Image 1 (cartoon, rainbow, N blue to C red):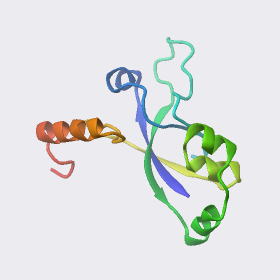
Image 2: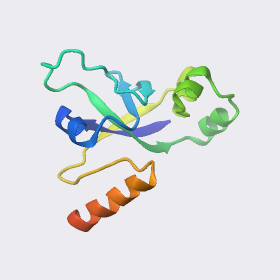
Image 3: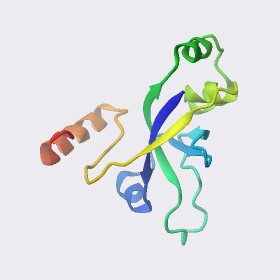
Length: 131
């Protein structure tokens, strides 16, 4: 399985809020954990560039891995966090994380009707991403 994640700065977290899904991954870009809570927890505020990544819910699957995933029962962490990708991790299926950048464009997660309105406002001001 492969998925995308956007690196965030502390400034972005202040402006955009701490909502969404966050992911941590190892030096080989393999996911360690996904959470609706901010991870890693930035305990010392003097850490200027913590490795904070917001998960972008786009996945790539190989057919046999998708079939395997679909055969698995929901897992405890998946049920607690309400994040389906934890089912794969809890069953030992690796998830490769590909970091992406937003460039100069604004971004936001679309999880509610209010979020969709925010996207429309961003497009009205900044134009389509392909402009």
